[in-house]
Image 1 (cartoon, helix red, strand yellow):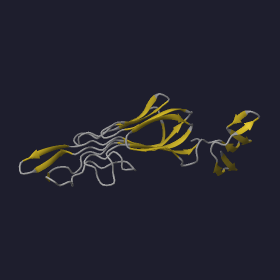
Image 2 (cartoon, rainbow, N blue to C red):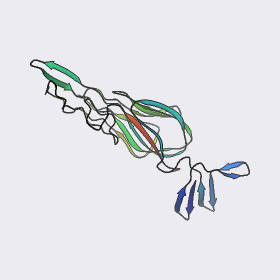
Image 3 (cartoon, helix red, strand yellow):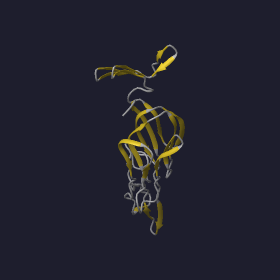
Image 4 (cartoon, one colour):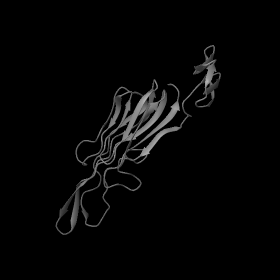
Length: 213
C-alpha cells in the first residue's frame, strides 16, 4: 500500500487489504489526491532470480518491473595442428540480453526461460512471447539479437550479443583464450571459453519497482 501526503510518497506496504464491508478496495482518494494504493511487492523487491538455465511460470501482478534476461553463450571449435599447437578458430559469441523497465498493465500469466550454453532465453506474458534473446553460437558472423514485441518498455531494452573473443592460436596446455565477453550486468551468457567472473549459461532477474507508470 502506498501512502501520500500531498504529492509526497511516504511508504509502500505490500499486500495490505483495504475493505468497504466485504469489498476489497485497491485505491483510496481524497478528492483527486491518492491516499492509499495496495501493491503486490515492496519497491525493489526481487520477484524472480535465476543464474543458469531454468523455467518458471507464475501470475505476474500489474506494475512496473526492472527485468534482466540473458541467453546462454556459445562455445568454440578447436582445431589441432602439428607440433602440439591448438588454434581456437571460432571463439564463442555471448548471448543476447534484455535489460530494462517495462509496464505490465494487468495481472496475467508469466513464463520466464533462461537458457543454458547456447540456449535461447525468453519471457511470455498472457500466452504471448514478448522477449526473445538468441543464444550464442560460433564467434564469426553477426551478433546474436534480442527481439521485443507487444511489451511497453519504459527504459533500456534489447542488447545484442558480443562476437568473437581472443581465441586464435594458443599452444597446447594453455587456457588463456576467451570467448566473447558477457553483455549482462550479472556476467551471464559469456562465450566459451569462459572469462573469470562470468558464466556460459544465461540467467534472469525480475525486480518490482512501482504500481504504475
